[in-house]
Image (cartoon, rainbow, N blue to C red; front, side):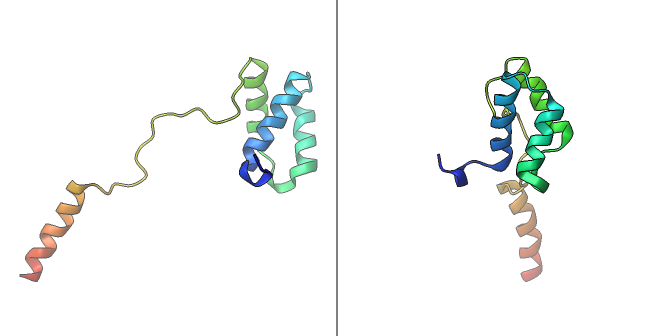
Length: 91
């Protein structure tokens, strides 16, 4: 996968995973990430949380999928509710 194909947060998680498996503490990992990524570095909280996950044996660097609310409320029922009153005005 090309460098452009990996999101910066996933790239950092890969680094965290590698260093955690080598026994590097999360404070040192954060320092190294800040040196490389500057303002794009994950927050201290996120670095520590990911370090903990990888130390416990987690292998995946992607976020776990979970049920989410739909990003839009555009449904046929909602569209009808809006169109019907508008038609009454036009007639």
